[in-house]
Length: 102
Picture 1 (cartoon, rainbow, N blue to C red):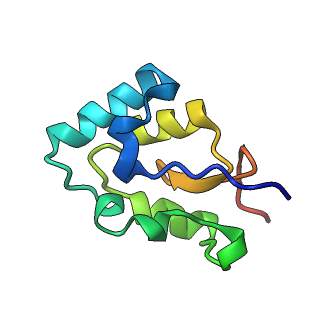
Picture 2 (picture 1 turned 90 degrees about the vertical axis):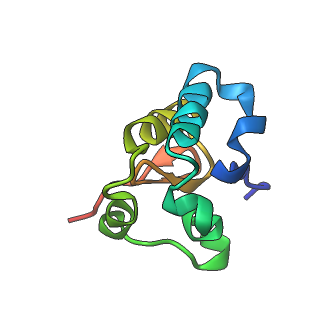
């Protein structure tokens, strides 16, 4: 497996490579004064399998529940398709959104 692309929301304002989804999320975070849980503890949202740090799909949704920028963050993740991370309550691994297995 190659080196993973990591995109931390803490550095979102510098990562303009995803166009309007990035801008929308950045502006939304600014509007709430940066008061989003992932900004306080960004490593928790990495969901990096190499560190054994992957929550369940349900846990990821709960981590982001009630976030004031949930919609914008989800759109950003869908635009970015990151190698690893949790965006808008969705876990991304290798550019794919994980779904709950039954």
